[in-house]
Amino acid sequence: MATTITVATAEEGGAWVMGLLSIWVAGQQTPYTVAPMSQSVWFYAIIRDMPTAMTNDIHLAFAHPSERSEATTAVQPLDRISVRDHIVDVEIGAFQLERGTTQRVRFDIVVEVKPLEGPIGDDVDRILSYDRITEAVAIELAAERLNLLETLAERIADRILLEPQAMRAFVRIQKLDRGPFALGVEIVRSRSLSVVEDAPETVHPCVVYLSNEALHSTHLSGWIDTLAKRELPLILCVGMGETAAPAVSLGAPQRRIDLLAIEQNAWVLAARDARCVVVGTLTELDWSMKNGQIAVWAPSKIVLDAVEGPATAPSDGPSLAAWFARHMSASELMLIGAELPADAAVGDIRVTRHAADASQL
Image (cartoon, rainbow, N blue to C red; front, side, top):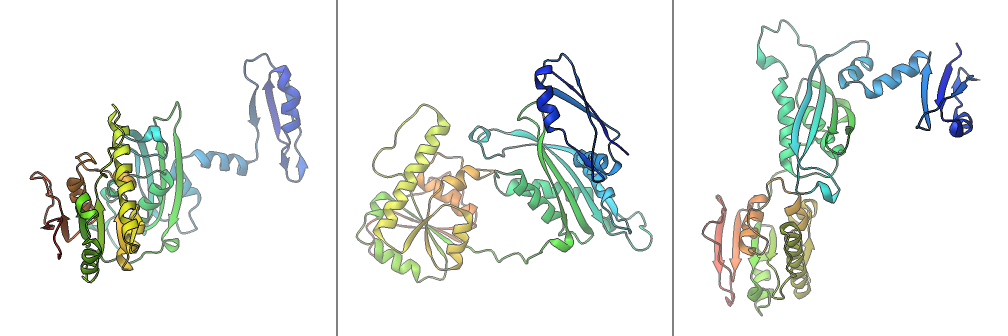
């Protein structure tokens, strides 16, 4: 069957549109007509009598995930549960204008599940609950601030597929506040394609905060010798350097400036002892702890990406170190040449203190 394409276009754009329109159906070039119209837009195309397969593909590309699931199910269909139009205010995005503010994000999720054997018995414990889907969203949103919807969708799908009944997950995520449209991604993940790894054992490091006096102490290398011999992984923290950082009137830029000042001081520490390596991501910290590397924390990325960041300013080095120790599930927080404020929350972390002129720890 021939495909007829009617194109309404401004006269000046007609030749350009005609040159572009070339659709092949069943190996034959499809005839088309161009009907110029006086409109303010360049062109507006209406495609009629398209082949069924093509129109279905276009429809499914923008259909709800439940339709995608139904259309791509094998001969033996699976049961499906879904959560539609689940809207959450969340801070997410790679652009600077998306930092420090929330935007509405909509989740549409369909999960194909194995049919139950025998009667359900109206027993909620035998099914995959809708709460598991919304919990997967909440858990991944709370884990850390993310730049990409793709990353979030992948993590949600992987978490859902940990459920024994779940066989395939369709996850669509859309940003609703970036313009007069919805920007989004959609992924499909199957249990057969998902590698479920055992959760790694949590590592509980010793976080050591060094004051500026301690940082420049002649005992520094000796302290590191002592700490390196302990069984606990070691992460060193410093505050802002002795040179005053630039001061600005806006809070968010000042926070970034102060964090960068801490990172400059971290490089000063790395220069004082070659065993110290400045790291700024959770991945690098995890590798350091598991491979015996002495890490010096560069705080910008982890602080800015945290869902619940530190309540204190970066200029309060000991409090920032206490927040970081909790964030890393540390077993011990050691302060050398500094005191922890009385209102600093440390939970059940063991806190030890040493003077900046202590010859031994």
